[in-house]
Image 1: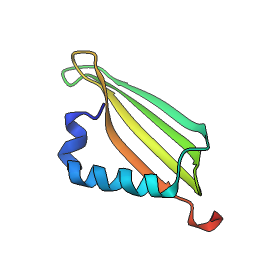
Image 2 (image 1 turned 90 degrees about the horizontal axis):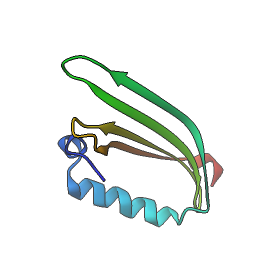
Image 3 (image 1 turned 120 degrees about the vertical axis):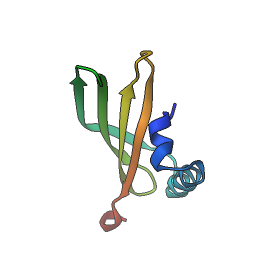
Image 4 (image 1 turned 30 degrees about the horizontal axis):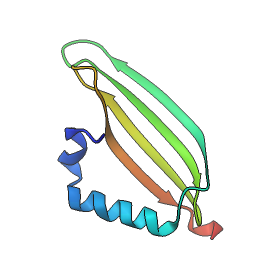
Length: 90
């Protein structure tokens, strides 16, 4: 699910903390895809990258974004995960 690149900048302990904080906000009640992008790079360092941003309704609103990358073997892994909590709409 999570790729090596993800753990180059975020250790497993930090990921567990993030997941625990997200779980404290509450379960997902509703979500909508707000934005998506695809980037294809050709050449010696070829890769395909996907970006998804979701508006998520939990106990409060959050904006959650995922960056995924396809590796040389064709596997798609998460290389970025960010959560922004909307503190103004609590």
